[in-house]
Image (cartoon, rainbow over all chains, first blue to last red; front, side):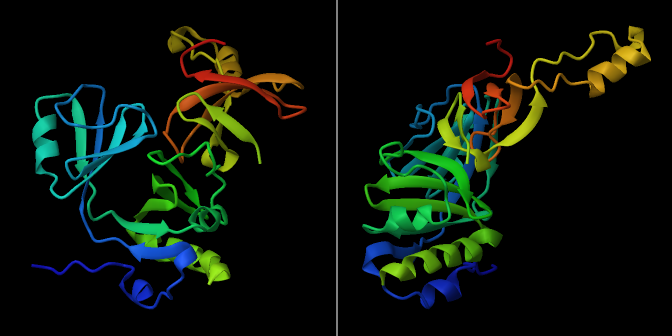
Length: 170
Length: 88
């Protein structure tokens, strides 16, 4: 069995505590990209650019026929899609999750991301966007909490962008 | 930065998009019956207007979809956008 190592292990360990914008490397989970026009027997979100969490499974609708599903186990998603015209791809190891939370979190993100994070991006909204030069999935889990899904090799870059922005609020 | 309205995602910053040229250029239905001049016209000749221009964009760092958009090439003002495969 090969040990899974986070690309953020060193950076997260050395991160200073800044309550205005806390930065956390989230633990691994199963991730599945689901692309389908069929209606599956899964409790997944139907509104575009929205995310819901149901029974420990988070579904993020990123496009008209595209969902990113974060779950403890990918098995039930593959099972629900079997027999339907659907593309189901396990991307658990492709990306890592970062959380940034605190009263200044949106401001720190906007240092590198041009998205309007005011009333146009309420809690529960999610989208693919750019942070600096890296493509991310941004999900607002609370008023001051954001969940980022970042490509594994881009994770140190994104982390350092956010680290640089939040030091202003130390 | 331009704010471009994606028909699926709403107004988004320009850096999430890629430009894909003039919209509503149909590929000739029967290429073998098309003369070289007509084919070259289809491939290369664009209207390049000064003013109102229907163009294709792709929301590549978003929903990934192509869509059409009417933009004024002088003022950069975007009149409206509408899904690919439809007419304004």
